[in-house]
Length: 112
Length: 121
Image (cartoon, rainbow over all chains, first blue to last red):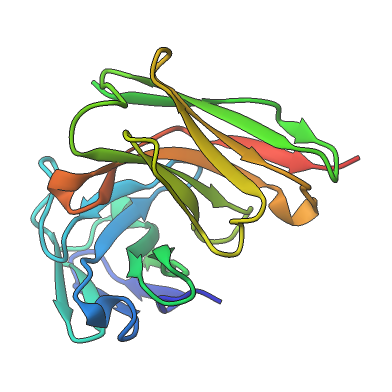
């Protein structure tokens, strides 16, 4: 069971908008720790998509955006494309007994 | 271009020690606002942080693996390593080495390609 909770799956048609949530607690996201998001295509290593809640590394399309509020964070993908079909993970830091870097369980995005 | 490459045995017997090395090219592991982690992913499952090391040699581990994991640096070879003792089948996973960038608030900007380690007799 992951410290950060993500929906197992989301789906959307090409061109649509989807949101992936990442719910934590007062020991991690709620303590002010930044949230990062990764995209993992099948058979490959994860790729940094969003860092520090809402920032995009160079080369990441602006169709991807992130936000954080309270004990949760969200990744929004607009103008969905077939190549967005992948697993998405959130990451933050936890200062409880699970102290250290923590990941969400991952969300499988299916483009219909 | 920064590259991370994991190396080590792909098969380890139960109760033995898993040893992996990450060779870093295109960046120095002993400079900059970076730190270095090992992360694993069992087949069909999510990402699991094992531990990290700073260029000072200071380490931090996932509490569930702290008693079995050791991460070390070899600055002369620009490498860092993972040792995991007393392995069982539940340690079977793809193991990634990764670089956290302080300028990215600790987000992992570079990953190795991953190495599959199977624990089996």
